[in-house]
Length: 406
Ligand code: LLP
Image (cartoon, rainbow, N blue to C red; front, side):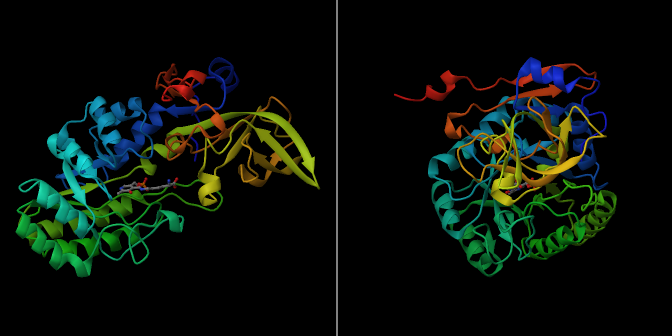
């Protein structure tokens, strides 16, 4: 859902002229608000919010999240590298590894970053090479959720985590190799709008946590959704979920006899709504009775609709409230027929040089963009709270396309 003052007084047409399109825009006020909502989710004090930066790893956003007191999770040495550049300290980074090499494990261990291990196979490997190192086990408590099968990471059909029936063996490997098990973590999947499924996952994880006596932290994962489609989706009841989590956390701490640290790992919730994507309409055409609105937003720029059939609200600029609406298929400039941003979307009469504004484009949008068709990845700008606009990533150049060739 886009904030009504998203542009903070700026004229989108002027921004398009100044920076070109496609252009990712981020609103700092909205981002800070989401960071604070997550920081204040519970009153339980030993609580940390790890920004899951795969959703958006722009350095400027990472710095803002750090200013807001967030920590970060990382899925790769590249994410660790950028987090360090943004000022996160090793004890503020959690490396959630999945099928990684010895070098990648070493990259984290040498920096003093705790590694989450997600298979018995990798636990043996890690233990052999880093006896004494701190480790967390990623556990599949059996609960999964997500907006698409592709993003469900708990339950029966997933490559992730250690299954409950493998935990005894995991304990034996920990014992044998001498690694220091200090945490357990899970992530049930990405996108839920009803807190019940998250609570179910947390409850299942805490039941398992009780069987591990010396934990320093329990990471409950991310997945918190937000409404992409205001007509069919509602906001997640954060205060209800927060109150329920509080109850569960306090009760656990009492029974466990220790104020263990609880972590969560939101990505989408923090960044989706602070972002929007501005594109230009370059062609309008009809084929076999279907109207096509041809833009510069190819799936190299925004792949979510193609990959997950994801819905993003599309606003057209300038606004023409009186114009007749027609069903347009909004497409990009990539040479594949699947290059579709939205199918049969009711939009006012579209003309060349109109702008389209794709809402909620701050999570998994730029971070999943590519140079397919040798197209240039877009620029990103930050709209500050005082209305000033700052370029926070320049557009790729043609030179960038050949930089790595020998
Ligand atoms: N923690 C772990 C271990 C994860 O794998 C993820 C996301 C998160 C936290 C953050 O989840 P979030 O709070 O953002 O839902 N590309 C997909 C989403 C993939 C999510 C991958 N893992 C999309 O565009 O919808």
